[in-house]
Length: 384
Image (cartoon, rainbow, N blue to C red; front, side, top):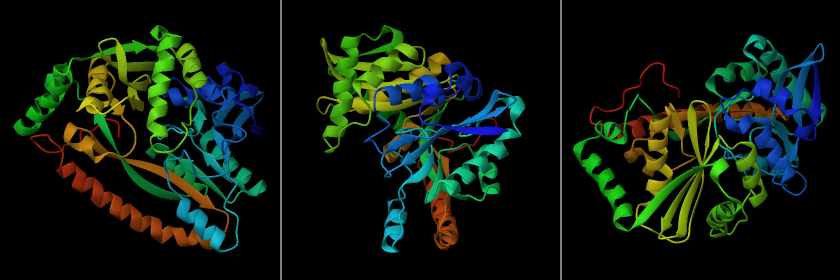
């Protein structure tokens, strides 16, 4: 097996990359990663520098990893700022580091991309990423939001496990939204219905459009709303209008916008991405505060979309304990880490185990607060 490092995703064809990435997760597709690069969301001046790894055997691509050299820790959603400060206080440089992740997307998905028949390549690619970090003198290697099935591969390569929690919605074969609500306690069910009525009673209407039906005019309005969410926090948005317009064309069947209107005016919107079995809620924006509109646009509409399309899992983004009372269940997320400075690497081991125990207790406490009248029941066969 031979490996090659790419400074641009377009150095490999979309067909070759997607052959190993599959169609389950839209964020792993060549079209998504290329749109980030072509529209300057990653690259010079962004802190994200593509260093994608591909593996060939007899000239055929058998595996790949989305890798980036990072100048900072923005846009990762697995926070290691304190590690960087500890490095600097010891007279060491933490940046640049090497990260295996999808920029600005805290979404669980495979980080070692192979065809099912090329499974043994996984271990070789995991070791090759460690070798790359060592050979190029990076302070560390970080694999963000891999599935639990890949943790052992990275652990065998010498990486340390870190656990966190998000809140996901699971489709247990519901035929309609009311069937999902039927599992709630009476009080929680009434609260949810009251929230949804607040939006309709305010005269706000909601419209869904897939990428192929979103005009450039719509994208400009959607982008303005998205940008407001960042500007209100004093930051520029990570993604550009050009990025959204491009994925709307190249990933038309995977991009979905839910637009809220007061009359003809678009006052709020959420942009979703869809895989073969899962829905991902990503980008929200609103002109002003409207009672319960965020919950309706980002969560309840997403649940209805999953039920109508048969999606098994809905990942609405990071954080947000307010999701618990709306039926989003705590789900473990993972990252893997290796620090070149062995003193720091070994010091992290007990700290990460202690942190994991806290996360486990948090997940149990969150489960006890779910709105279901029969409590939390983990059903076998459903994705976590």
